[in-house]
Image (cartoon, rainbow, N blue to C red; front, side, top):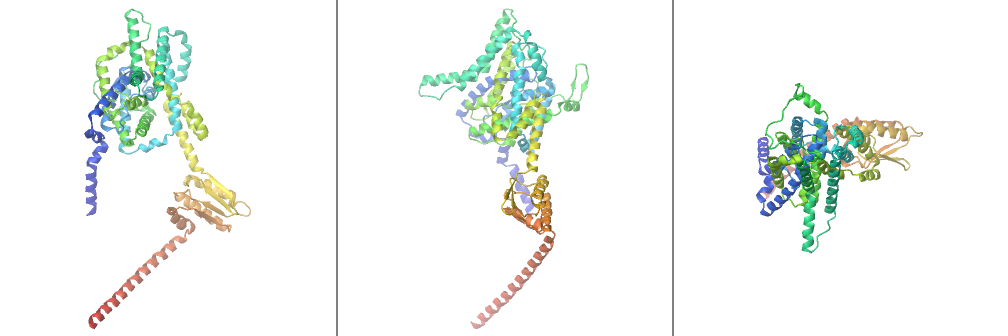
Length: 598
């Protein structure tokens, strides 16, 4: 009778309001929504929107796609994250790293980019539903830093050709470096001058924003600070707009001195599923299986990097602003965004650190600010696409270089050297291999980190001290890969010396043991007995004492002792029953005598 009741309770919990709120976090904050929040969300959404549009255009260049595809990828996240996200600050959209990964996998083909977004979204949503977010923990910090530094160098240098206005430079990093320097004599003066001016303005505005002091009591000073902060925050939009006006003015007078973005597709993208097959220029049909095979390792790397980047950003801002996020719900929000984005020709997106920082600093109160940002992107697609024709590529290149420059964190190398020198190995492997292929860099770094992790498990630190007998202190846990090493140390230092020596094995760091460890310890104990020396366990945790006492120390005698123990229990129960019956008889006799006496 109990099982159906439990099942019913479980079903009621699955359909409860708290469960619904867990899957749709918007239901938690929407009933409490206030007018003041609306004002702050509108301001934050507008500010982030003016930052998003120029960055989206620039990141589409990194992804080797037409610029409108950057905008196609920028508006779905605002709507989906408002419903499913658990961070008030995070903004989803194209980023430099995801754009670089996309370019390396799809090679600038828009249809395949949308299909990649669909598959990545399905993988991410599946991980969220199956609660597989813990897999991200196996990508270590040195691997992440190595990848982001290499990606920043790769992305930044890839934009030098646009600053110089040169054409025909291959995408592979080594050849890109060679041909960029080889073709410097072909540089266009207009692009060089405009690109350097844009870089200078962006750097100046960034420095002005970072140099703003604390507010004082003066009203004029506060107004000046807000003006500088506003101008510096919208620096990308202002610089790109100014560069476009300059380019339009020169072009109107017949002087084509700048390399322009060129004609773009106006209007909103059609809402349709991404094509599952493709046709090459010579008419050959490429099947779905062949496309997926062509994606290769990128189909594993891109979903993981997208999740890692977004969750790291969400956790950072949640800690900064004193609230908590649900990591698995964040996975679901990113996955659904990529799935739905693929229906509007978007390529894979994730959380953007720069735009999230702007969102937080502007005082956003809820994820609803993303809706305002998405509306601005949609308005740009609907009405401003003809104006994007005159955006100089040099200005977009300047925006990208300034966006990725902070990602090159050279100080982290010194920190790793001071704290744990071996961390430099996965960092260097990831950094160097990423210049070959970015996804190979991540895979190589994760593989090296895994080897180091397995090595530390198989070779635990064993501190040996001589105190009349040998005391061996295990510096970490003990699992099956370490049994051979432990046995080797004990044999060489205690059993193979003359005369053999007794050993005390300090196990206070050991919390889990497995069958292999138990078998090896039992064999060691037998060999110590043969040599007439002692093998003593010290500091054994309560949860392990039973296993060591019964499986290692007693060995084969354990079964006999267990039988004796069970027999004794039966005898005691029999004695208890007989004593109880005897006492009951005596009690009845006393009661009977008392009645007779009365």
